[in-house]
Image (tube, rainbow, N blue to C red; front, side, top):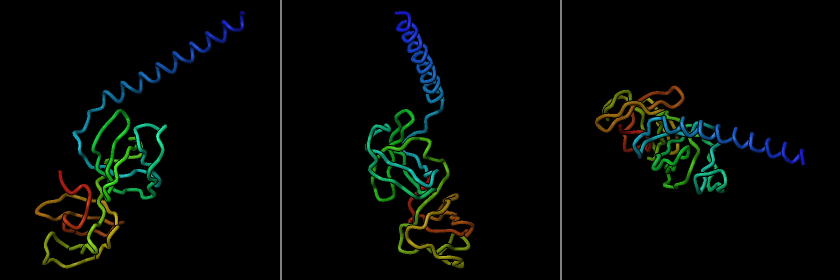
Length: 165
């Protein structure tokens, strides 16, 4: 009988510690300022799973193997984000898989990267469809674009990602 009492006390202690940890995590998440949706994010890991629901209990519907791939966050639920990928697929990702780094993916067959934000400026590089790069400021239909150190300006209409705001 004495052992059962000790076991129950240990369970209560562990349950209490778990509740304190959960409340601490919840208060940290609640204290963080919420961004208005939709907003842009990018994948922060080399492998990221998109799930059919906002929990690890849900199966993965996609596994992305592309760090910096841009996604649009369309809904927030605790530490989970419902995201849309460049092809329009939607699902849930844990916030730790996402970064605020502004990126974009080339959607045109080819996106000339110009020296300046103008069609008449010299073409420095040509980015093929599917190339992902860091996106800088955008104005007048042009965005600064950096693909692994190769920098230029691309038409905003040639890429999908953090091209506004």
